[in-house]
Length: 111
Length: 115
Image (cartoon, rainbow over all chains, first blue to last red; front, side, top):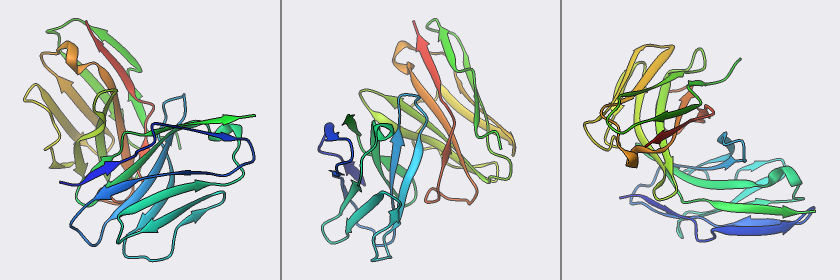
């Protein structure tokens, strides 16, 4: 079964600094998709970034980028120039025929 | 666009009662997903539809749970009878393309409390 592990229940970063959130997953498939979703206190789930496993190039969306290590089954999210609005729960997710989420990492941004 | 609409936003009911959660996906989207979020189990995919047809309901916890999508603009998730352990936030999401690997747009969720 595919599982997604986020080993950091909580992380903290100073405003304007960089933080990296970790995610590992387990799969026997070779072609799948990975996601990072953000859930602010409003509860709304918002897609941050998406990576296709067959693409070697790491996905980037403005201040958000990933480090995708397929052989290691690792998919970390880097947030640069952290802003107060980045404070939220961040969920890593894996999709092949379904969608599986990690337990989440709560990110606090200190002013 | 109004985004994914869920109703009600909050529901409090007593054990044994029937609960119906409603979802209106984004117009033009072809896939619809129901999720449940709890502290203990995190976010779980319950069922999803492609073009109004249920594709995978393996995440539905028990026969007490049922979901329908009678047309492209409406879906329901029903729990009958409800139990306290069903208390959770239930999310509906939709995506333009079929399949689970495309960007999903989530609704605001329904917080269900079963007493």
